Image 1 (cartoon, one colour):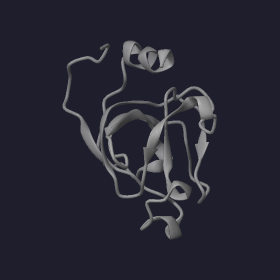
Image 2: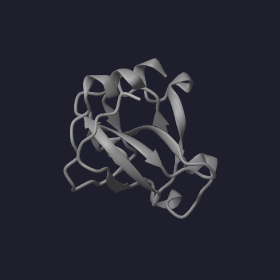
Image 3: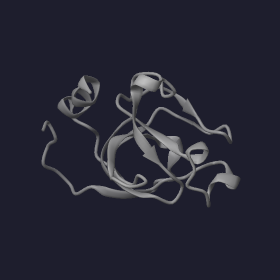
Amino acid sequence: DGRLAGPPAVTLTVHNAEEACRPLRTLECALGLAKDPYRSYGSPDNRAGRVWHGDRVSAVCVVADGRLVRDEAGITSRRWYLVSGGGAVVPVDGWLPGVRTRNTTEVRECSAAETAEGRRS
């Protein structure tokens, strides 16, 4: 599947900058996972799934040069994590923008194969 054997995945907790949305699992408060960290985050054809504040996802790897994303509090980042888990009913796989977590644990860099896999989705 293009993923390299390496250090185990790191568990991340999804963070929503909008305090009013943190307890809600509504569509309005969902945060998107992208298919490709280099394409527009808000584009409907780049949507891989949804996660909500507090969801725990497994980060396989990270890219540091993805599309710049700004959250509702003004925090910006080009970091994107390739994650699985979370979701409302079925776990989802996709790219989580760095602004959607407050990670403090080292995550390995994605290989070219892992990054290309996302671009084919």
